Length: 208
Image (cartoon, rainbow, N blue to C red):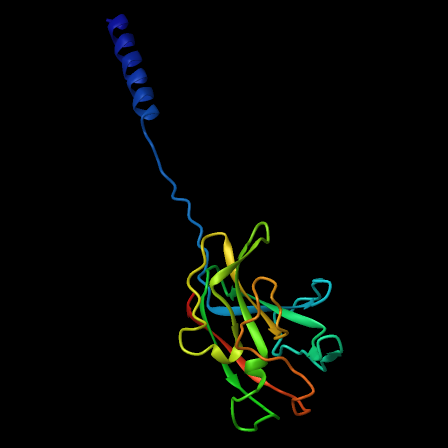
């Protein structure tokens, strides 16, 4: 009898061990990345002669070409720097889809008009940049005069994974180095009226 009782107790003990070994519990692991809430522009001056980048700014409100220098070989005025504008986000993760438009400002040549103003004498080059290597590819939008950036002309698509969009802004010099300056652009020369020429580039995120 004692033997039978011992066997029964032993059997129950093994059964309980087996039952416990098969019991499972789960813990859900969760981490949330916030969605982007805004567009961030990182503006960097780049020396036009040496291609050396200067100090970047995420708070810049101007692209200051400043006083241009006369190039007596080509009889045109050229800037010290051109500027890169890298497109990113604030407030969280995301890849922005952006449209760039331009509006003419002060035009000493023809006040109150868009004829022969900064928009015809400056360019925007649209690039897709590899986030890891920095390799740049000219996008399908290519290189355009600022004055042509209306409607969908400056509408960039969503960049591929691992890349971001960049817009290089420079003064038209007639450069034929790829990507060449657009043939319908004009240089600043002694034929222009002295003064300060201005315009406004507007970057609008259509999605974040």
